[in-house]
Amino acid sequence: MGAAYGTAKSGVGVASMGVMRPELVMKSIVPVVMAGVLGIYGYCCYHQYGINPKAKSYYLFD
Image (cartoon, rainbow, N blue to C red; front, top):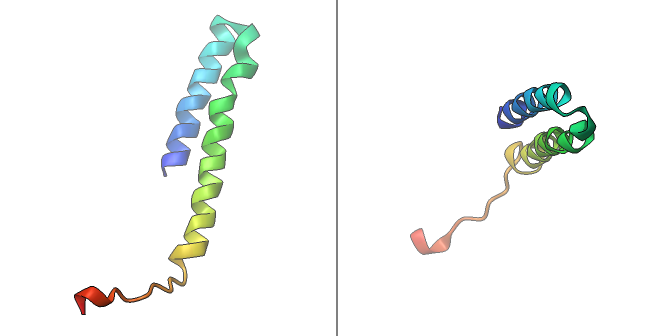
């Protein structure tokens, strides 16, 4: 959900940058790419740790 929000906000920034300063559009695409990478990273972490967690018990609280 957070990566989708970041992508949307970055997309609005790219659109406004294209209107105001078209020569800087390529620089403003970096946050969009980073938000996408964050989404992929979250998906990978979910599959690594969320589907089948194998946590060891913490013996000090037993």
